[in-house]
Length: 519
Ligand SMILES: Nc1nc2c(ncn2[C@@H]2O[C@H](COP(=O)(O)OP(=O)(O)OP(=O)(O)O)[C@@H](O)[C@H]2O)c(=O)[nH]1
Ligand SMILES: [K+]
Ligand SMILES: [Mg+2]
Image 1 (cartoon, rainbow, N blue to C red):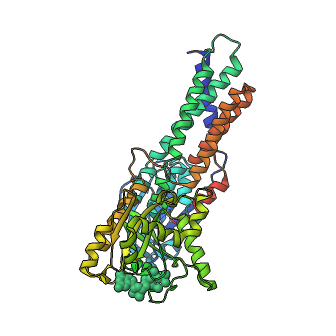
Image 2: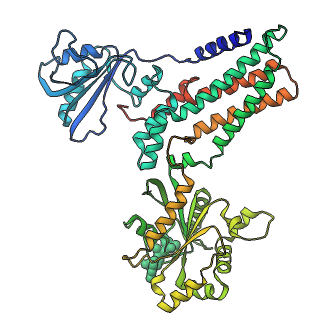
Image 3: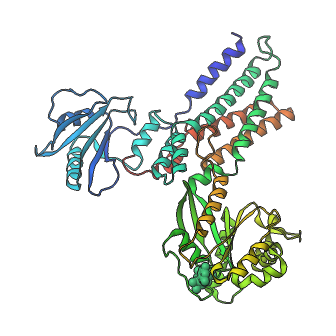
């Protein structure tokens, strides 16, 4: 083995060793109701983790020595250690460290899910020395500290617990199983390799053992890394959208029927509907699951110029929601605008209508460019146009309208609906259009090429990318190689922060505070 290769190896080992900078706070044994609710239920699970777990299990089941094999279920009576009172008949299972969720000795008691049973067992556990009720996320935190899961996997676990739709579940499961971590870990080891090579070159370039082209090889590797990280970052936020929900804003002029449409889609009277224009002022949000994709449907105030102070604020909020939404459903009262559509043709009508209704907003978007068209206006958003109140048109008007609805190849979806007539397929057609737009915007949650799922990862990856680029710039300017190498060291750090190889208490506190107790 060349000196160069030997050195790479030892450097990697020291780099990997220096990362656990925090101390595990696992002196006490912790316990919690882990099955979630405090409501009555068939079975409640109480989890215990820590070094005195076994003592508690033996005491509660009145055994003097450990007769329990790990990972096997036993049916046992549980007794309160102080009163000797029988608490319940329970299934017990224990896991010997390190083969447990937390990496410590763990025991689970499956008891009948009544509040009195649960509190009696929790009370019994509290009587043991150095036992305390777990903090939110403390079991997971111990799993992390003991190396059972990295941070990205733990975040996947939290997402899995919070997943509300099928696609979210798939994405979270894949992340929990380490598919996303794998990418970050591979990148990290590549950078560590680069760093080790550069350091070897710095230390030993006088000697013949170091290959001449080492720095060129590093440059190629860094360039490849930059490419991979960039394409992961520029994924159009597909994974984040799936995790957080796609924002879909319903917009249009007053009385177009926006709130009626929200109610029709949600199948409940969420928003107030009235014939008075300017009814909706606040933003009304409703969470939906469409084909496994999470959606936040947003009803907004009708867009118009007004002197009503409250309505002005409503219109302002509507515009800021247009800005932050991924999909816009533009509702148009087709009865009111029929003449105009027939006269101008649909695309011209739409351009004029949008310019009139959204003019101020559009102007702010287009700066000096005065040409007006959907593409400019969309600004990357998906658009669905809903011609509402079609029930007010007669058959002749409807068929004349249909002939006019030529979109000239614009990338928008169009539908004709009625929010009054409950018994129609129009809303279904709209939902299908919405689903196809949303599925284009979201990752499908599958593991082949896991998507970036969190802003935290995005921030760290961006910093990592900057450091890699700085390395190349410093190399190009032929600056001191030691200073350039420092950039690689930083890049390793940023990546390590994502998975928790480099860690600070602040990051951990932020991540684990959102966990429920018992996780
Ligand atoms: N005939 C008919 N009337 C409708 C339809 N959809 C809504 N309306 C009526 O139109 C009026 C306005 O409906 P809303 O849903 O309040 O309209 P909006 O766009 O939310 O209005 P603002 O909140 O004031 O901007 C109400 O009287 C609704 O009953 C429809 O499909 N057909
Ligand atoms: K209204
Ligand atoms: Mg409304």
